[in-house]
Image (cartoon, rainbow, N blue to C red; front, side):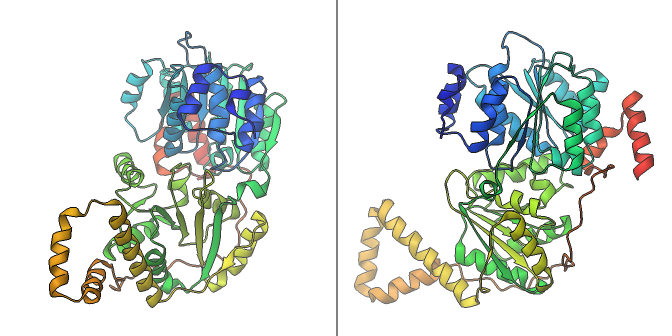
Length: 479
C-alpha cells in the first residue's frame, strides 16, 4: 500500500498527514490522489468510511495558492453535518500550510457566515441552498474557483438538489477541475457528469471493499412489539462503548431515546427537526463520551464521521441496501473490529435477502437473547471493571478498610455482596413504542424530478430575483 510521502506532496501537507496519524493510503486515496494532483476530473464511487474526504481533501489543499485571497475551492455537500465535518478535515490537512476551509449551511445565522467570509477562506464547504443564498447576496463569488468537489452526489439527488447544483456550477469558470464522489451512480448523476465534467476518470471501489470487512454482521428475527426488550438485552450483554441505534422515523427516534433513558441507558436522539444548537449539543456529548448511545434517522446521520463507534443497531431495517452500507460503515474502521446488528420482523426477510445479494455478504442469524443472558452480561462487565480497577487503580487507601471487613465477614459472602451492589441488573420497566409498519418491498429511487428537501435546507429557497423565480417554478411543478 502506498504512503502519502510517495505522491509528491509538499512538506507542509505531509506534516499534516503525519500529525493526523495517517500511515498508508486507503484504496480510494491511492487511486484518486494521483489523478487529482495531475489536474484530471474524476468520478469516485465510494461509500462513507473509505477515506474519500482525504482523497479529495489532500489534492485540494495541495493545489491552493496561499497568496491568492480569492475562494479557490468549493465542496458541495447534501447536509450541514457533512459540511462541518468535511471543513474540519480540510482544516486539519491545511493546518501547517495555512489553508482554511469555512462551512456554509442553512440553520446558522447568515450574518455570522458573512462576517467569517471576510477572513478570506481559501475553500468553502457548503450545502446547496445556503450557497445559493450567498450567491444571490454576492457575499460569495465563485469566479476564481478552480476546484469543485461534489460529495455524496447520489444523496443530493435524493434530496432534490440536482437543479441547484447545476445552477451553482454554471457560475464557476469552465476550466475548473471537478471531482464527484457518490456511493451509487444513477442516471441523473451520470448526466450531470457528462454536462459539467471534462473527460473524467472513473475510480470505483469494489463492493467487497465497501461492506466493511472488519464489521461482524448479525440479524435477529423478532416481532415488532418485542424489539425494544431485545435491544436492551443486547446492550446489557454487549456493553458497547459507543453505539448508534438507527430508527426509521423521527417519531421512532424520539420514542427510542426517551425509552432508553427510562431504562437507565445514556442516550440522546438526532433527527432533522432539531434546532442547530440542539444538534451540536447532542453530537458534542456523543463525541466526548458523555452519551454512550446515539439514536438517529438516516438523514440526520448522513455524513456523520465519528471515530470509535463499536456497535451499530438497526432497530428498523433500512429502506435500501445503500442505506444499510452507509449505516454499518460507521463502525469497523481503521482496522478495528465492529459489530452491526439488524432487527427484522418475519415479513421483512425478503428485504434482508436483497441487502445480502447487494453487499455480497451473508448476514448471520442469531438467537434472541434471554433475560438471564442479560443478567450474566452485566455480571461479567462488573467483574471486568473490578479486576481492571485492582490492576490499574491506586487502592492503597482502601486496604485497611478491606482487611477490617474480612476479619468480621466471610470473604466469599463479602465479595458476593459487592458484586451484587455493583451489577446493574436489567431494568424491566414497561415501555410502549408506536409500532412501525414493516417494509414490504424495495421502493425504486426516482431518477428524474425533484423531491422536497429537508426542512433545514428548504428555508434557504426563500430567495428573491432569478434564484427565487427558478425555485418557485420548480415547486409549482412538483409539490
